[in-house]
Structures are given as C-alpha cells and as structure tokens.
Length: 346
Image (cartoon, rainbow, N blue to C red; front, side, top):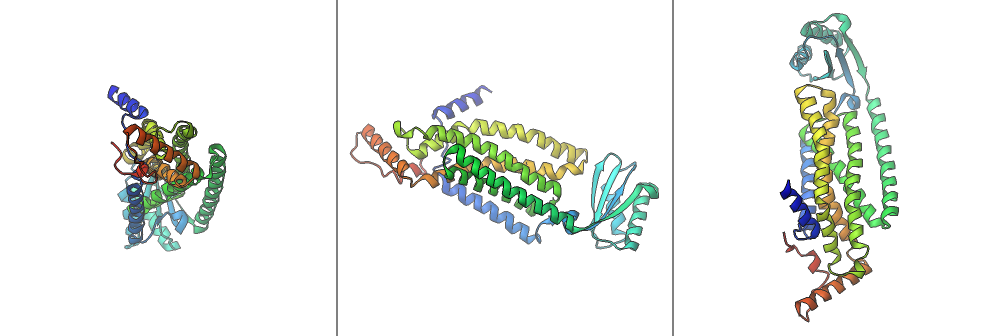
C-alpha cells in the first residue's frame, strides 16, 4: 500500500510521468485496430446475435421446477426442431425461460409437452407466448432517442462548464467510441443483444462521462494559468494532469468493476442468474473501455484540437525559449515538434 501511495505521489509531483499525450499516434492506431477487429469479427459471425425481443420468436416459461438444467430445455426444443436453436435462461429459483424461433401451433404444443417431461412439471406450469419484433424496434428507437438527447445535453454542459467546445467534442467522441467498441465486443464474442444489454450500453455513457470530467477538470486546472507560468509546454501540462489523476482513475474503475464483476461471474456464472448477465457484461466491458478511453483517447484528442490555437502556440514558444535559456543554448526547439516527441520519459 505504501508503494502504491508513493507511486501516486510521484505521479502527482511529476517525478514519474507516462507519455499519454506524446504517444497519441500509437494509442489512436491501437484504438482503431480494436474497433476494426471487433467489427470484422462481428461481420464474420453474420452480424449481431439479436435476442428474441428484436428478431421475434416463441417463448416458454417453466415454473416450479425441481431442476433448472439448461441442457434439458435445449433437448426439449431440438427433439421437435432438429436444426432449431434454443436460448435457455434461469430467470428465478425454480423458473426457466426457453426462447426459440417462431413456432407454429403444432410445434408449440410439442415443445411444451417436452418441457413438461424434461422438468417434471404439469401442464399448468408451462406457458408459451409469441414475441414480435416490433417491441424490440420500439426499444431500439427509444434507446436511440435517449442517446441523442444525452449526447446533446452532455455537449452543451461540458462546453459551458469547461468554456471550450473542444473539450466537449473530445469527450463526446470518446463516449461514442466506448459504446461502439463495447457493442463490437458483444458482436465479436456472439453474446446476445437484449434490452438489458441496451440499457447497459446507455449506462456506461454516464460512467465514461464521470471519469472524463474528473480528468478534464484537472487538465483545465493545469492549463488555465499556463501563460503566467510557462515552465511546461501545453502538452506537458495536459500530460501532467492525466498522470495526476491516474491513481484516481484506476481506483474508481476498480471500485466500479468489483461489484459488477461479482454480479457477472458469481451471480450469472455460478448461481445461474442469467437475467443479470447481459447488463453486467455491458457494464463490465464498458467500465474498462471507458477508463482507457479517457486516458489514451480523449485527453490526447483534446490536446490535438488545441494544438494550433494561438494562445497555445504562443505559450509553447515561450516555454521552448525558457528551456533553451536554462540549457544555455541559443537554439530554440521548435514548439510544434518538441512537445509531441515520443521520447518523453517513463
């Protein structure tokens, strides 16, 4: 613990500095590669694995069962439909939900009878319904509307709070990347897209925004008075702010991941609470991606957007001149090159 505290103090004072901003090219390239890989794997799998709420189908609920064996439910469906696919979920103690493609009346009765036999229940304990895709379309439309409203409000709030639209733009682009990559991971791994997953995608926006605001607030604090104290270049001040908030970003992420991981791995994995899996997985992936996005994408993007501002260029020129005087050299390093040099110390 003492070592971690010492490391945090060294980061805050600048004695240890990781070049988050200076190495922006490799971070952006890696981010693009991950997004392309996720999209490519999703395409190779035939697109997203949409849940029954989005594609339509038949749903059976088996209650008061002594066993919640998933394989028993799958066999009950494949005995009727040799090529059929069933999604079996434990929704509560003694209750199993079985989702299939759309069945006709004869197939529905046959599957219901198989489920009665498989789980040892009576006819009254097996109910069947048909779920149309229109409900999923409505959910998708509402989610899209919610996303647009959220992005607009966040853009306006951050532009007013930070007094610059460039911070707002960097934050919004980073949040959209988080959602896109999280959805891409869902598609690449074949996890089912359900309304719970959609809720999870929207929820991670708020978490990503929280971490971004913390880091950006420190960036503003470090750069707002930069003209009066030109010891560091603008990029170096931004990079210092990211390093100073690194410990907080890590601890906040760990605190968020632990309960979500418990729900995902213990609740859904060990205890079989399948209804928790979709939203927990979206949150688990989104928290990790959101933290990395703030450090490696949004902060460097903001620095890039400010790179050619007149006040930033003037400040960097003064910082370069001061550094040259301290070296006892008449040669002033080009401020357009030096602050972005990958040779920053580790």
